[in-house]
Amino acid sequence: MLVVRYGAGDWGVGELWFEDGMPVWHELPAPARTLRPPPERGGAAAPTRTLAGLDARPGDDSVPELVRRVARYFAGEEVAFAHVELDLGWCTPFQRSVAEALRAVPYGETVTYGELAALAGRPNAQRAAGTFCAQNRLPLILPCHRVVAAAGLGSYGSLGAGYKRRLLELEHAAV
Image (cartoon, rainbow, N blue to C red; front, side, top):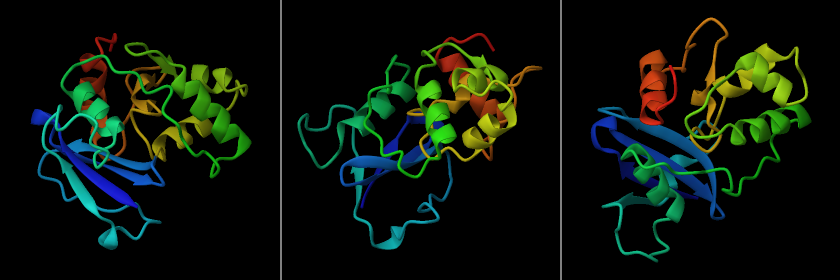
């Protein structure tokens, strides 16, 4: 297990957790927040690295490229995460199809929970699609902030609707 902490300007500090080189958990940046390990991970013993800057020693394998890309995203650069390798072995077949549908939602665009469910092959499963988003372990890589309620923005877990709105504004998405 490797934990990499990164700064994202006025967004705050976030963490990406890697297992065997693959991302397994992402805590989005927030100011003055105590970051904690994922519930099922033994985080206290995990080695932690900090990204000092966006261009910190290019080619340095001690900080995975994905962390640099996430930091660039929060700096306002259009960054794609659709081809990041993920282990979705923990997903049910429906959850896997939701994850794949999420990855297909382009930067700067939104879909409703109903549209996401339809894209995942289950047009009447908007609540189940919403549940997947609420339990998302890898925000940005599985961009659930791009999923909105039919009647408006919708929520965004403990970070709140304001954070979701800010992410969508960063992408110049219609909010």
